[in-house]
Image (tube, rainbow, N blue to C red):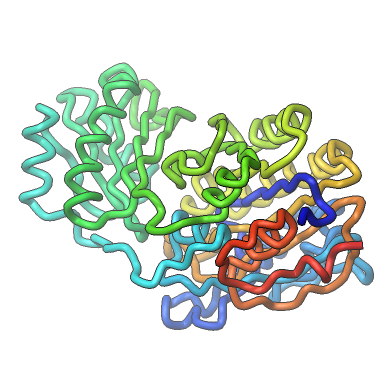
Length: 392
């Protein structure tokens, strides 16, 4: 039987961690606290998010804590191996990843790069772990002059290809990504291939565009999205959700050009979809600020989201549930530019949501378990539902 909420909205702030996870030391992240450091070092003001309880979550900063938050609030720890985007999103939809995806901090095997070059007909530059912005400064001009593709990886299991849009149009770059997917993902065990188109007239002006696309391996098992589709409950993906789940279980999707656009698209979807799940990823926290060690930029982006919270809440119906969370940390104050193993926030808001502390929870999949119970799916979802703690 259907629970109290006819419709759910899950918004993932990509890279928004709220303190080192219990096993963070195993990942070298015992110091991490993305939100706490952004609040203290970036002096972010988040009155609307704080009112929901977000400021009560980070352990290293108390400036945004509320005595009586107006939402359900808590933290989620990750059970899956790894701290990457796909693993985090899959777990919050009920699929645990037991074995971490392969990493290539020293670059990809020469044999793979040679095959990729042969099949694309283009030479390759880079082939190392690097910051996506720094490698454009280093190799962008050589790419423009020669047409060779910039290939690099990061602390994630990703094969990234950067190319200037005037040299390699996005459609052609996507074709190269599909070639790389076959070689790197299907044969080598890499999680994602990412197209990184950029524009600009020189190293100082190169800038990545919103035409990024992710080509990810499909989830290794059933997720909540599959169960919702089987129950004829639609899932609408906003941002890179469609890419992360290889379109499985998603009825319709839209890509976005910014986090503000992601909020706009979410509100538009609330006006169109009377039931089911609206699933949104806000990627700028991670891509533009976390990975670039930009504390101030992260803070301003957080303030931008905070300013839109009243719009999101106003768009909710009486029987809607809004969940705001993250998929991993990406502490911009860290020396590294990689993801950090952290708790992620759990905020549950809506007109029929009872506010209160939800505690530190053992798995991101508690979100999937809660939604599965609410939608009466009877699906074998791991995790502990918090539906009875929030339903009023």
